[in-house]
Length: 54
Image 1 (cartoon, rainbow, N blue to C red):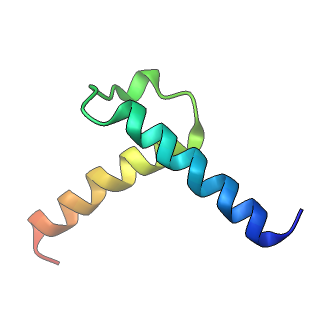
Image 2 (cartoon, rainbow, N blue to C red):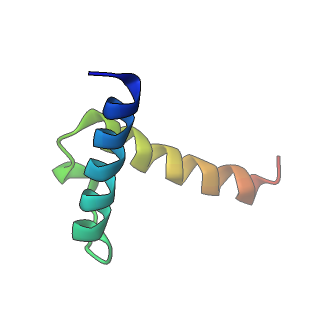
């Protein structure tokens, strides 16, 4: 499997996941995937960083 095939597979998987989850309530305690947990926390930290003005 080439790098292009892997990238294509990841893109399609993420697009499908977004289509299923857009508009749904996201609860941190229900996120089983560590990548999703990291993205959730990172999103909160980005907002905090903007609020603090640094």
